[in-house]
Image (tube, rainbow, N blue to C red):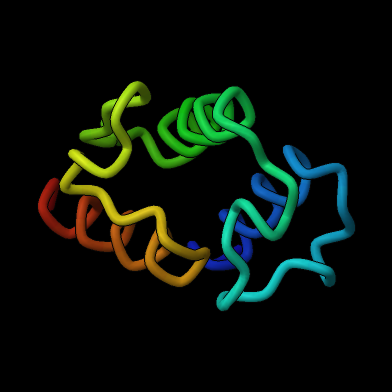
Amino acid sequence: MSTRDKVIAIIAEQAVLDPSDVSEDSTLEELGIDSLGLVESIFAIEEEFDISIPFNANEPSQSDFDISNVAAIIAGIDKLIAAQS
């Protein structure tokens, strides 16, 4: 499974949607993911990829990790994985 597929599966699970309903252009807000769902998604992503996402749940706009849409999340994860290598 690719990073994209794994992230979409995690986000779809949090949004209680089918993965086919989640596109890279989707925002978490459009998918119905609230702040608690966002935090749960972040934890699930960190566990799945064995990474630590620099994220401030209280102030997501202050984070270096872009959560503006699914594609940005995937790109951020790929960047963190590459930095670990």
